[in-house]
Image 1 (cartoon, rainbow, N blue to C red):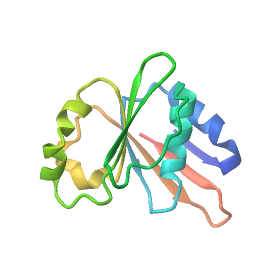
Image 2: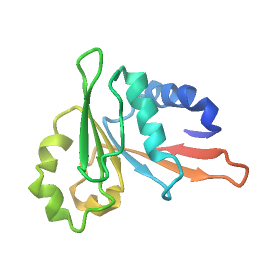
Image 3: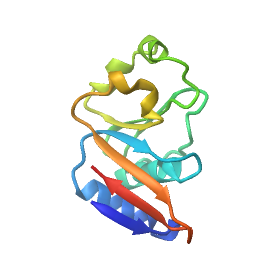
Image 4: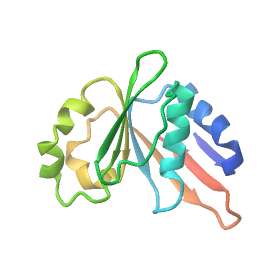
Length: 135
């Protein structure tokens, strides 16, 4: 699935992504500032997370609960230096928990990603819109 969208269309885009029944481990790829965290916040909201969401840049992972008691983990591995740091935090327990796992900067843990996953790539277009590809 490929979508071109503006930030104002983010709620519709999040619903379209979830309507595709993606794998629960989703990798978010794109340059810094392209809107990965913003999309993840909207996906959390669409899933029914009512708490405030934020980027886990320093904590590495934030955990949220939806209004239907689903668990959503949001990872940001930008500051990770090596894969063993992710192993030390118990990344396998998260990735194989069958809960939603939204992962930014997944290339930092590429050897730990489960075989069954979805990839979302976002690119900023010259006019300010985003190009999203879901695989």
